[in-house]
Image 1: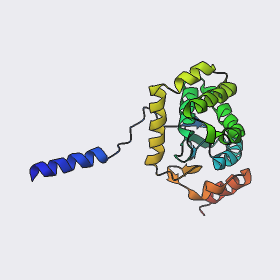
Image 2 (image 1 turned 90 degrees about the vertical axis):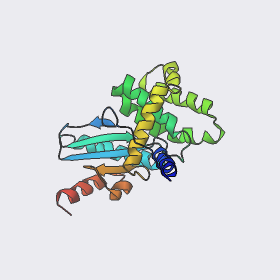
Image 3 (image 1 turned 120 degrees about the vertical axis):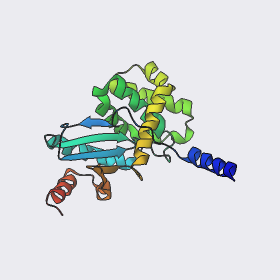
Image 4 (image 1 turned 180 degrees about the vertical axis):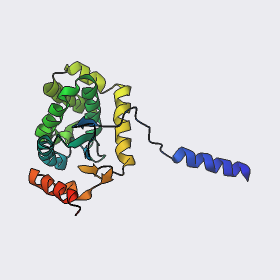
Length: 207
């Protein structure tokens, strides 16, 4: 009986997916280090909704960066076949040329459709070459270095840790938002500066 119980405990333990603790809090930070409001956004670079929402979010942040902290998380969705290698490329950009990270994000959103329109015919080799090309064009990083990063286990692990971070926050899809650590589903459909203005006005007034 004790042996059976021990086997059961070991089986349950092996089934539990422990979320690794990141060396630093996940994401790309914008704004003041100390703020009453920290908005976290979880985006997928191949998600049309993320692409539609991002420009207004950045514009609103730019207008209010003196009081608003913004953290951008990459959260590749499983239904977008090549989202994970794109996220892995993002980890490479953050490490090697973080000052061009937003340029990289914007470039992907602007050219998203030209990539996704052809993914049905892509294998991973073709997709990785295209990802490396987009990344090089948007950041100036050498294309061969990006290609190497896409097969590098360290960057793969960093992308996985970020994905698991989003999963630990029960992120259901993209774009998703946390405000001061609390999921705010009402923000999912905001795609304008006016929408974010109304959202924060309601929060600050207690409604």
